[in-house]
Amino acid sequence: MIKAIRAKLHGIRITGAELDYHGSVTLDPLICRRAGIHPLEFVYIWNKNNGERLSTYVIYGEAGSRICQLNGAAARRCREGDEVIIGAVEYVPRPEDLCDLRPRILIFDAENRVTEELRYEVSRKADGDFDFQVLEQGGP
Image (cartoon, rainbow, N blue to C red; front, side):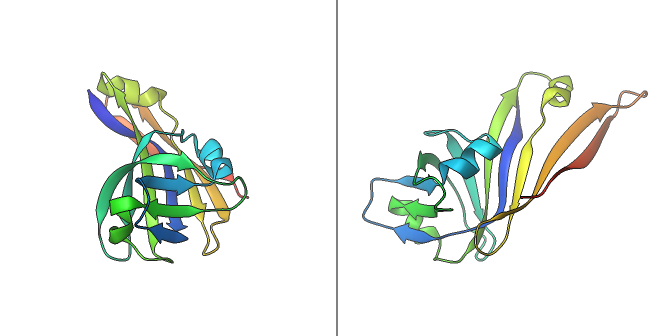
């Protein structure tokens, strides 16, 4: 099995950190639906400000709030305003199955508004090697 990126929130900012909470990351469901990230799904979080990396599960917050709040132990890994990357993965059984994935990548501004939407595309060349492209899907 190959673990591959399926969805990514690139440059979303932490809006809060709540230590006394039972765990997870709280995200705006409108953002999650647009990227294809599901409630209770485990995601990876990479903090661009301090290099911390962690994994936790998604809880949906209030729609339209643009919330990105780390809860529980994860709250110690960030500060409000930190820029993070959140990635959801999918397992594929064979390398050629990577060509069937179309990961959606959302790019954010400092207020957690989507500024760009991209797609990753993997294809096979005539010689059997892989080709990789980043395709623009539009903005807000």
